[in-house]
Length: 452
Image 1 (cartoon, rainbow, N blue to C red):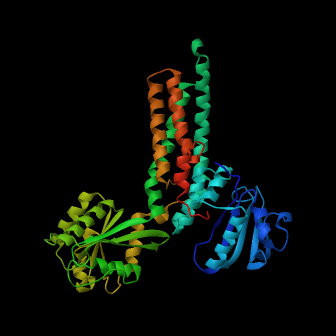
Image 2 (cartoon, rainbow, N blue to C red; image 1 turned 45 degrees about the vertical axis):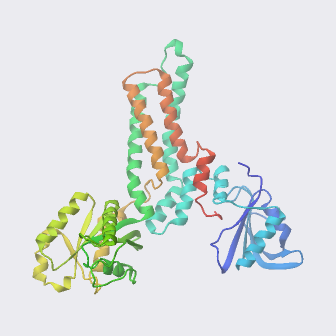
């Protein structure tokens, strides 16, 4: 990839604001900025310094700005970087960008600043992807996991595994050079022990993906139940806004309604659904079908029922939930309509009583939800896999190493062992970027915002 040109983009969100930050990176970033900057000579200033001045297009003043200098290699991209802080007018921002493009810069592509940082060795590919996760983090848990990966926790663990495998790969390659002399440089028992140990680590990392993915994308919680039990009222109470239409008419909700709420540093994605019942209404029937699909995809189901219904009826509904094999929480709404003695009759069913209309029991429900998913107890300093690309590569590595174990148990020639170890090294290298293709890099970095 050609990094000889100088790229430019707005790094703050588009739209009017107090300031906008325009970023340039490349060999001519300082020279081009200096050509339109009137103040100190930027080409003579030290790295990591700020300078006040004017941006001028000929004799016309575009804006008063502050230029921040980062001289290579002491910058995010390890290239010359200039960050121009101007007033946040869309007109001013575009004028400055167009002016610098006319001087020789070109518009950056999505994620190109971070791509250059990766290509220039500032960090590996898994750390670069963590930058995007950090920007998108919307809870303490997702922030902590992204920060841990960006600081190299995941990469460090993989590099250690890879280094041990490379040692054995080199020993086996040496055996191939002396094939006619039937010598063994790589101790097969030591290789077996190493591969077994690595597969245990891989198994732990792969298993962590379910938790890591939930932390990154939020916990999908389906609110289900029969029509008119207060599902939409509950959603509104949780969000503290009139998000869903509430009516005494059964079957008001025909489609799913989703919204997010952060509880105790964990994002919950609540999904209000159509009431479950047999119906001749085609539209409502489609809504019920979607409800059942969403329940199968949920991490947790809040099953709502009317507190005034019989225990036998509730037990019948619970039996249907058990068959889904998904964690669930039974919520009995309209608890204000039954006595304390009647509530005691449900003690064996582990239900939670609320009155969604009166906002009673909502805080207790939130605490129960946190306990159910148990994410607030997660040690986010431990390595958690949050990226589907990473988990697929880890599975491929695990498969390759299993073939190595099989071949150690059923002795084969060294070239077969070498081939499978190389495959494992290849897949581990795809995660950190030791092994890359242009298509892989394009797929990753085009998902970034342009200014990053």
